[in-house]
Amino acid sequence: MEPFEPHDFHPEDYPDIDPRYLSPNIVSSAALPPSQSGIPQEAWLPAEWYRESSGSSVIEPNSVTEDNGRTYHGYKEGKYFLPNDAAEQDRLDLHHYSSRIMLQGRLYLAPIQAPKRVLDLATGTGIWPMEFAQEHPDCHVVGTDLSKIQPQHPPANLQFIRDDAEEPWEFGPERFDFIHARYVCTCFDNPKAVMRQAFENLTPGGWVEYCDSTVDVLSMDGSSQGTTLEHWGELMMTGAQTTGRDFRVSRHYKQWLEEIGFIDVVERNMAGVVGPWCKSARLKQMGRVTARALYDNVTGMSYKLFRNAGFTPEQIDEFAARFRADLLNPAIHAYFPV
Image (cartoon, rainbow, N blue to C red; front, side):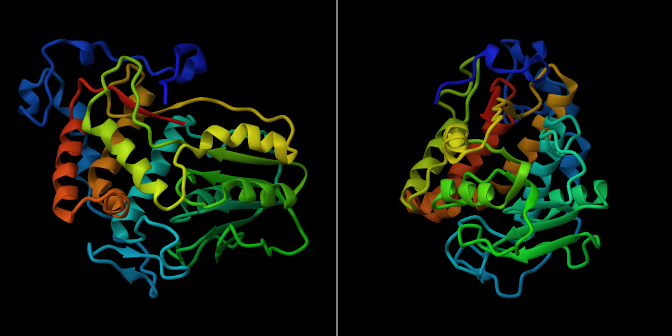
């Protein structure tokens, strides 16, 4: 996949490189102590990297423990290949935090007005609908997922349901004013069919919003080429193909939405920045959080798909070590296309 061009971005979203990260004598902080790397220590070791788990993760009783020691959903076992345990829940919440930074503190971009019913697909830990329900107390919010790992006592206007979005939707006759789906490129065998169900369950004048990416690791200056980060994305796509899924499916969303019958379809390109290399303080913070989420959880994200691609557990661990070293390399200015 080709990197975005500068004109593809809104000016406020353009990820300019901090000049300090272009110095030819900068080396990876994995190779030298931060004090000798040419980059301020706080840029690579911010305080939040030392945080402990909140301990508030939800254990799903019917989860299945695999040979890597991670737990996965038991409902419709095997349909989804990422874990649902505490470490994965931390990753999902970190990506939620980075997404809010990307959207300048917002939960969504759709121009919704006083919604009464809202649906969040593949809700994960439920953090998005939790915050949406708090911001819209007069709205009834529903979050669905294969794993029941959401808080057991959500706000009164929020309901969590264990559900497979690819099955016929059964939410009753009342439709939704807003349907939200974020980072679902890994989730569905037939994503266009899910999109069509969204259309059929939307009120006239309602909105649907997808915030999604591919797993391509790109850079506008070519610094990601040949790195373990780039190779990771390639291997993830190869592993996904063995399951019949396309991790670049978001490229088709605009066309599919229009084919299904949606109008006023708007596509906005953003950069899911990895690492604190941007000049913008906002994108720098987003990159720190995204890098932290990947650093901690690359093995869990990769395990099943890398096994599909022929890797042994030992090879996965060795690859993850090289991946983490590249994450800490300030000369690599990587991003995911969003």
